[in-house]
Image 1 (spheres, rainbow, N blue to C red):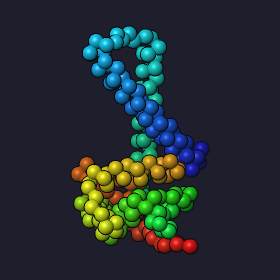
Image 2: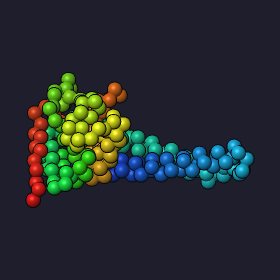
Image 3: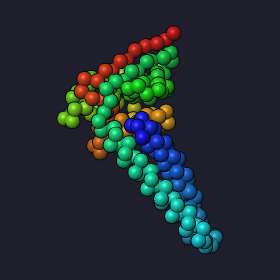
Image 4: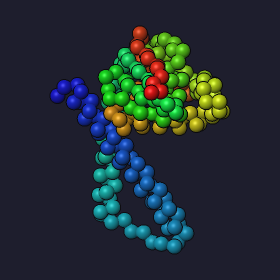
Length: 199
C-alpha cells in the first residue's frame, strides 16, 4: 500500500474515531443524567448483557481511535515544507498544506493560522518554534481589534484542527505544548505564502 493510500486510510480512521468519541460523550452525558435520577430514587436501573456488549464495543472503538491518533501524531512530527494562505473578501481564506486539497477557513481561524505562522523562529527540532498563547493573543488583538482570552484561542485551535481533519489534512500539524505553546509543524526553510485574492 502506497504512503498516500495509507495516510488516507489513517485519516479516515481518525475521522471515524472522532465521530465515535462524540457519540460516546453524548451517551456519557445521558448516563450521567440517568445516574442522578437513580440516586434520587426516581428510577431503577438494570444493566442487561446487551448493555455490557455495547460498552465493550465502545471501548474497542475508542482504542482504534487512539491508535489512529498516535499514527497521525507521529506523521506530523516530520513537518511540512509548504503552506499557502490566500485571503478572500470578508476575511476568510483558503489554505493549502503541501499538495493537499485547499481548505476554506472562516476569518477567525484564518487569522489564528496566520498569527501562528508569523515571525517564525527556529525550534530545536528542525521545525518552526512555538508561540505562547499570550503572544498569539497580542497578534490577534492587533489584527481583529478585539481582546481575546487564552481560552478563546485554545477553542479556536481545536476548531482549526477539526476543520483541517475534516478536509483530509493531518490535524496534528497544529502542535501544542502543556505550557501553552502553539506552532504549525513547518520544516526549516519551508515556503510560506500569504496573499490576498479579493476578486
